[in-house]
Image 1: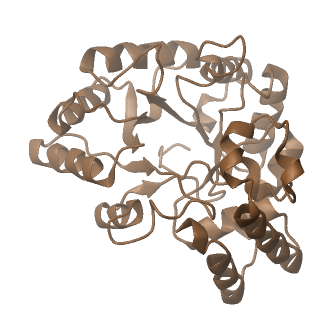
Image 2: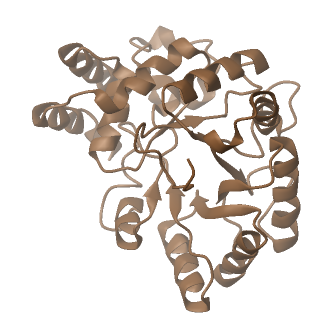
Length: 314
């Protein structure tokens, strides 16, 4: 992507890197990345904290795998790299001192001299909007990052950062990463939600948890299916009749259009106007329905059916 645009229009999908060094070892991660790039993808999302939660991990594993991949394949120009700061105990908070140290750490692990999209991962209320705007603008000036983004901030704090940057003539954030899916609509939709903010400020939107930690792949059809899975803690809030009813409706639509449930769930997000959903794959086989999502054909009736089926998550 020579122009370093935020999204490759050929494949409006962001590959989540949270599995790298966690559920996917390095060899498996390389295979997924190869398949993603071969399919026309380019935007890969990770964070400095991935995957500190896994037994034996400390954080930084995903970035390390990605750095090894870039070094082995020598294809940095083919990839749009997004990573984050502020969510890891190893580099906590968004003070200027911490952010500058964290970006250098990430660049080292990623084996690159720039990051295309750098997120403030979680808010740090000790920092004013003006301080945040200056800290991240300085990274752009130093050519360590190309674009600024925000995740897990309230819409009000995001708006304050944008206003502060504009007032001071600093680099304005260009993207947000909200939690948005058929199983999590309330924060995004509505007059005060992230969607309204994105529209007002022309922000790119890259939703995380687009498949609700795997719920929307269609593999969880009864309560027993939730037992003993790697993401049981994340999935347990969906382990009820409401969650199962949503999956049943999703599978019904998928069967009608001849697609996988995951592809339908991601296409629903694209229909709702997001720039590109983020989704992860442990293997190239798991990647196939994600890559196919932009080409899934959903009628107005299908969209209305999914809207109705997911009303409980508004």
